[in-house]
Length: 72
Image (cartoon, rainbow, N blue to C red; front, side):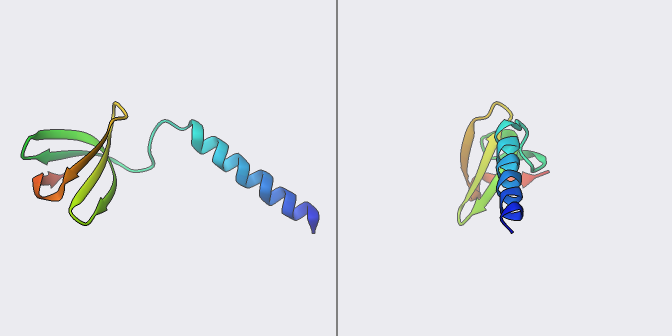
């Protein structure tokens, strides 16, 4: 029983360690047309009134939903 618990802990720690070193987000790259121009990045979340984007340069942008014209 203790061996199974240790395997779970070690496996979970391994997954977290691997995720810390991955540079590419696990969401698709999008081209987002806004009223201020195009943004290329990864949409991390869409909240009430805002779109949160991580750019290819690893800059985190919070775009007002009203400024987003399209996403591809």
